[in-house]
Image 1 (cartoon, rainbow, N blue to C red):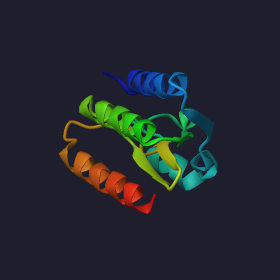
Image 2: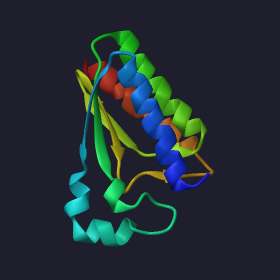
Image 3: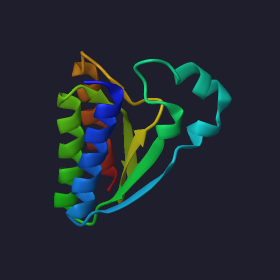
Length: 123
């Protein structure tokens, strides 16, 4: 799978969550405006800067939170890796310079589990 196919699968997951009733906001990543970041990560195997976006989900129930987390982990199983975060009332996917394909997603999965647990404990 190439990086643009991975992007397509990721946005299909975003659309699936949106279609299920979860409020979603997609804005251009501020990283696009940082010349040093663009220079460092505008390389083969990474998402091109013109595709860098910040996705925010606004779940209103525990079930919606779980569906967002499930989609993120499903992408990770497909070796699609990107930064995630959030706080009480929202979840963020950074589809920016951090977006890439990885053959070893064990460490990423463990890290994301920690982040999910931390966010859930803040809520």
